Image (cartoon, rainbow, N blue to C red; front, side, top):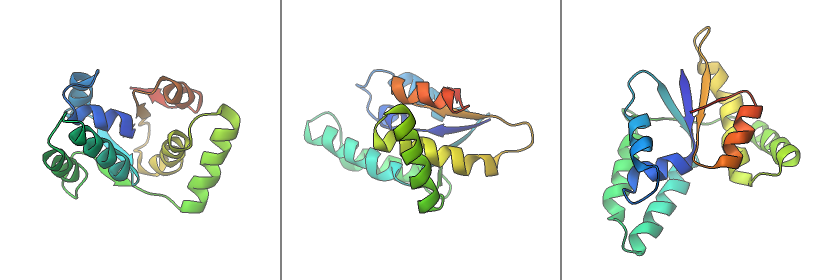
Amino acid sequence: MIVYIDSSLLVRSYLVDEAGHDDAVALLDRPDIGLVTGSWSRIEVSGALIRAARAGRADGKRLVDSLDRDLGVDGRVLVIAGAQEAIEAEALDIVMAHGIRAMDAWHLATAAIVVPGLLEPGESIGFATRDDEQGRVAVLLGFKRV
């Protein structure tokens, strides 16, 4: 199985005081699944980690360094990107149909367009998020909620 990891789950994996931290870390540590995320995740997650550091919750540099390792060439999570025009069109369709936030739709569109090309025959696509509305739409789009 390939699982697309939304930025909401990635943030929780780095911030120990976040609800769901242990579950997020456990998912990232699973050797039996391929983990992917979209190119904007680095920006979203870095921003959340720096805000947490400014609030005194974490060491921002250490956490961003960990994120960069996880999303690096030999990291635990493969960073994917698709054709911008196609991703934006799909994200707009998702927003119009479901009324979810723009970046949530962008993540779903990226997963829907790029991940199928990475699958082995018979392999399924999962979507991991801590956002209930995004997770509901992911299921409607045919993803397995992880």
